Amino acid sequence: MGNYPMVDQVNKLIGNILAERGEVALPEIGTLSVERHPAERLSRSMIKPPYRKVVFSSEIRGKRLATYIAEAARCEAAAAEEIYGRWLAQVYADEILTIEGIGTLKNKQFTLSAEFDRRLNPQGTASVKVRRPIGFDWVLWCGVAAIACGLCFGAYYLYDNHDEYFGAKPVEEVAKVEKPVVTPVEKPVADSLATAQPVVAEPAPEKDDILLAGSGTVDAPAKRVSQRSYVVLGVFGSKTNAQRAVETAQKNHPDWRLGVYRLGENLLVSAFESDSEEPCQLFKRAHQAEYQDMWIHKAR
Image (cartoon, rainbow, N blue to C red; front, side):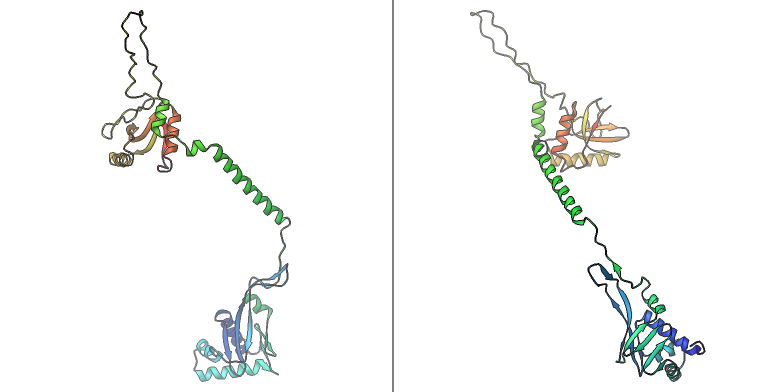
């Protein structure tokens, strides 16, 4: 068709229409349209990927080629119809429509040219062989077995440490356990005739050194004690934020003895403190669900 520039131009226009809009009507012939096909399984090991192809219908539908010619050439409809007639006379003979660079229509079947097929399907249309991974079932069962073992180990670990995670004693009981027991000291009886004296016990300290808390305020923060552990609710750069944290904690837990300490230029708010780290750990675990950011600080 190299001797017919008009034919080449119309052929290119048809290719652009099919690639972009998907349908063009050819009066006296029918309609060419692009269909999209999903992937097809050809066999257990072969799959044809998704692809597009051109199909033919004897029904005239959609926009006619002459209309596209008029728009592209910016000419009158009559001139476009004339161009269409001359083009058809060149490409249609013996009931065979040959559109160079696009494909051939014969016996109502449209066969794409290799060039236009690559344009519609840049990813290719060759069938793909699917190879089933070797040992797939074995790997799957190994994974299931590993998960089951992990669940069993986790259940055993929780059962073995049930008291630690679910039976932590309240802070008051911890304090009671940690307090040293003061043994009453009885005065010896001088003789059988002496008047019996009442047994006098040494008074217990009002505040245990191990569990002493509630030191300092936002306006007058206390100094941290060296080697003492503190359960920290938060460290704040402003008095307003520190006071808000103290008020919220006191509202939710009036039994807590909160302490406010100076930490550099900031204020440290403590909910519990002890000379030993273990009671602090127990206190932290008991309230971890409510205060997830609670942590333990040990003063130097």
